[in-house]
Length: 186
Ligand code: SAM
Image (tube, rainbow, N blue to C red; front, side, top):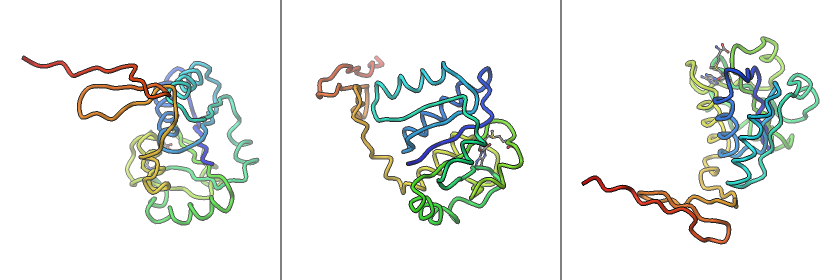
């Protein structure tokens, strides 16, 4: 079980990026996202994707993150550019979290509270350069899952059929519901 904990979410500013954090968490193998500030619209967007594209991804917001980390028995990873390079600690994190039965990955939005560095079991960097929580989460999950998430299936109402060109979507029983051919340029 992998849970992503998003802290510092500001509904007015971060709706789009926090939605991307949630969708990346879902697509790359996490089972849930917890967001500190309440944001019903964001919850609705994420649920709508899960409803159409499948899986059992859970989203909740308005959660006290310190209490959540206090009560959670899983391995706590905080993604930060100041941490230990992911390649140096990922095997240990995999071992620890499989023993604990859960992995919680914390990502920030703005500057995170200083005590988080002490609360986390691992402060992990994905390069020591500043970039994005979405990129850091995707790379971390890919390393954690050894790439297996890239071929996961979700059994949704809508399933994208990989095509060299155009867009094809099938429903659960395999009928094509969208089939757009690329427009010819001539
Ligand atoms: N200025 C903020 C600070 O000093 O904490 C950085 C905010 S950054 C846009 C948002 C989040 O992206 C961070 O809290 C962290 O979780 C993640 N992040 C950014 N760069 C990272 C890196 N190189 N490695 C791991 N996580 C990173």
